[in-house]
Amino acid sequence: MAWSRLLSVALSMSVVMVSGCAQRPLPLMGTYLGGSAGHGGADSAAVQLERAAGPFNAGLMLINDTNAPGSAPALSEKGRAFLADRVRERVQSMTAIQVQAILSPGAGAPPHGQEALAKMAKESGQPYLLVALFSSAESEVPAYLPLTGDPEQGGSRPTVPGYEAVNYALAELALIDAATGRVVARSDGRAWTRLNRLNVPIASNAYPVIHRSLRPAPIYPPEADAKDILRSMAGDEALEQAVVRLQEAWPKS
Image (cartoon, rainbow, N blue to C red; front, side, top):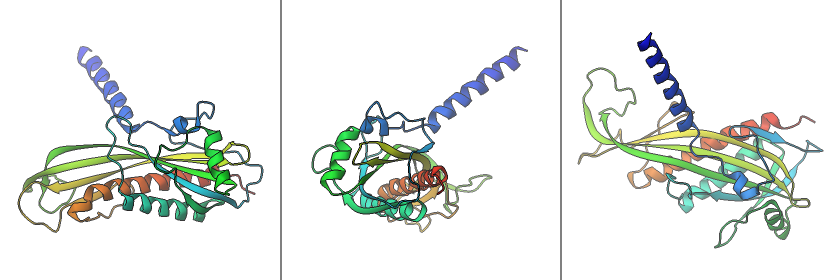
């Protein structure tokens, strides 16, 4: 009985630890929209529209938040441009939102609060503002990697020293009505990517390699850009989840 109780406690602690890890990073959209915005939690979607058909012409503001402890470094300009293109492509193909322009908050911090965000949309001549907020938690540890780059390392296959970096990405979307400041649609999605790279002075066409949560095929990035591509890919897959959820929640006209 004592062993059974100990095993039960250990399993419960494991579930809690896995649940906690799965929620990294914490949702951040509420801090940009203000406390009154409210959201039903991570991995959900909500749409409140009088007319679902659209189109809803919007300016897009992309935010890459890196302020949380354990956050990945900021995306490069190339990574930000990639995600901006993916937001435009995904939302226009799957929802009634049409991105008309990419808006920049300038040199300072992005505006906070629904009124400030709505004002930004008005000043740019857009009836709506689509906020796309990307954040991620990242860790890297030494690892012994298979020579072939295969993620399955069972048996007695030879290994070499290297590093394994994992990026847990969160993409949050919010559509704001410029006339009223009201949040009319929200969604979010999560994904992860893993980068394996060698720590030995040899060249290999199997490394560096990126494995993704939503795709079976690996990616072989250039060594110099591997970390930035890791973060960009994770953000795009999290975005894919967010847009699918937004599409599923969108009222059918």
